[in-house]
Image 1: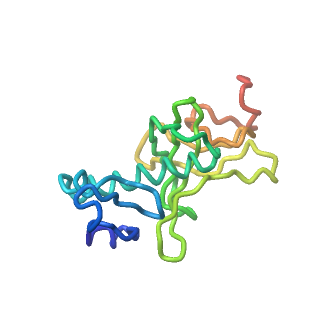
Image 2: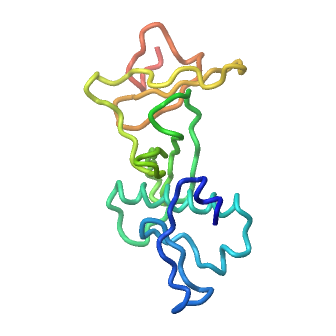
Image 3: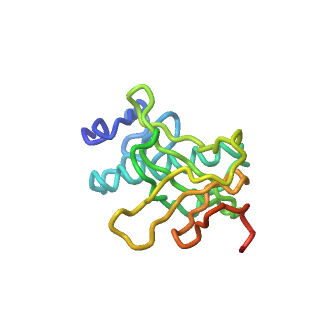
Length: 168
């Protein structure tokens, strides 16, 4: 698991003496998989599994979701770097709720937490610039004052940004 050190995630102690290869592998008390399941995967796949579980856990914690609720989709959002976070993902739950979660470094460790817009400035602002410098259709991340990031294309940005839901 040397690769996990490079990824800056510390695994919880693994009780392999009691559970053997069925011992759960956990990060911050979030179960990722059993040793047996992870044994058959390569390093990149293990890291992806850790990320997926931690993104889903952060989304469910944000909603104080009922036990057993599952995340169905993990969608990365392209943002212009540098930002105060490493990546922004939209986690879609089985209830169709979408939760923006950031991956960031805090005290030398990767953390996954809810991304909140700064509502003090009235919303309707662009929080990230051009997402693709070599692409014709630049995309922006916009706050529509509903607490959720919306992706818009360059062609949708007008001189004076109107509240979301207005076409003109």
